[in-house]
Amino acid sequence: MSDTKKRTQNKRRRRKYRLTMRFYGILTALFVIIVGVVLSKTLFFNITDIQFENTSPYSLEEILVVTQIHEGDNLFSMNLTKRSENLEKCLPYAGEVIMKRKLPSTIKITVKAPEIDMNIATDDGKFYLISDEKKVLEKNLAKAVSGYPVIYGYEPADVNVCGTMTSESKNKKELIEEIFAAFDKNGFDNLVSVDVTNINEIMVRHNEVQSIRLGNSDDIDFKIELAKAIVDKRSNPNEPGTIN
Image (cartoon, rainbow, N blue to C red; front, side):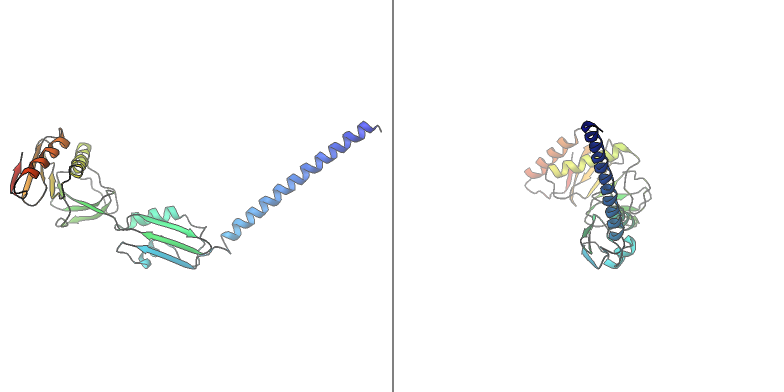
């Protein structure tokens, strides 16, 4: 056999050997990964400590019942995002919910109370209580919750508690958002009620004794800016009456 042929055969053997070793290396790595995943979901990272930060009215026990989290559960066997979302959907006064793993064996649950935004009146004289994220906190209230503005004529859709409030009228939904934004922008400290029953005769009460007649939905920001200038120029800013 010639030297050239021997060198060719040796190269083929070395190449085959390298491919074989690479194949076994890949199999070994996969085996280690699979074993690691199995052990991490069975023997290791089981919950021994639950940290709880809370501004909602719910106790840790109530939170754990809904989320189905227990000591001894594996940190990596649960979908924390889905459990957080489920908690927000089941408990009305659970606002933002954050769950984090803290290795090796701790889970931290943070539950923040929602920011109450407004009352929305229904045609039958009942009220919804709504958060700033438009989450329904209460339904069928006999009277509006004091300290928060009341919206009349909104045409609320029939939404259950924990659902997202919307209006049967897209125009009224957008109109209310525009009015609130304009009040915030122009520095009105208080907003008692907004009546959009007739969108050509919009009425706003910005405190207990003063109302603003906005008329139709045109130029809302300008009208509210003008009303604020009139209020600020009055010698008695709390003088009862209606601004046209």
